[in-house]
Image (cartoon, rainbow, N blue to C red):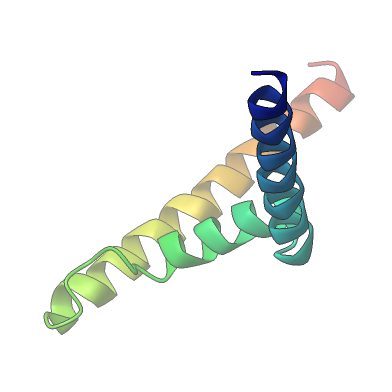
Length: 83
């Protein structure tokens, strides 16, 4: 019974170490987030057979990202100016 428990713990430890090694090799959390952002802006989830949907999604998401950056810059400049 104790041997079974030890083998379960060692198997779990090996799985955890393998997952940590994969995450470290793949760039970790930041690399994963950057990849998801890139795929989102490139419209990877859109129907690739429909060129209008792909380009419309890319243009819309790019405009949204630019608008977000402008609003963040404007809001931070307002906070810094004290207005």
